[in-house]
Length: 196
Image (tube, rainbow, N blue to C red; front, side, top):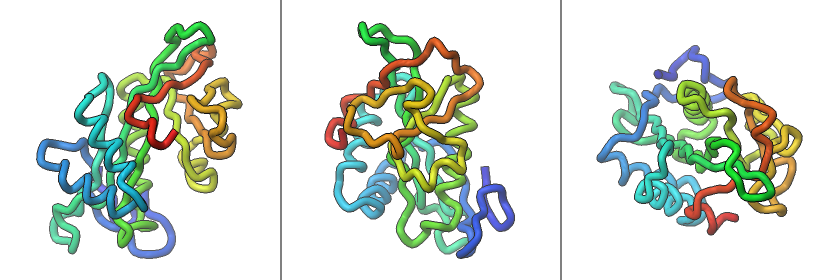
């Protein structure tokens, strides 16, 4: 998937960054870690990505945006999005389904607001649908994610792993495989405990 001038992920404002969006491959790890350390105030998000990669839960994916050839950012990992499988459990702890959690989503500060995050989100949604995930969930900015079809997760019956997570920031996008019987509590992998 390519994002460039006039592409679906282009946004008003600064010139979009032409990128190639693909799954992370061996050798991307140092660039992904540098990116997350640059994009966030502390190392927690970078550590989560590293731990998920090490533990490799079935169904995890790391999507990267790499600067397109012929551009100043050619070959550089300028964005990354992590998808982690999360069981949805009923009150008795029985697994009802597995959804995918989005996050962290990181873009190099100098490339933010230039379509990279939109390109990553589009790829994540397409991948989740192709893999038959029933829903995507995230804890994020309520002003940003609704443009990608996200709305209140609690309103569709998906409870966060921690009661303290604010309603406005706890969001879900239901996908074609969703069934009403899948309502329950989403359990994040242990790697996310520092942010819980």
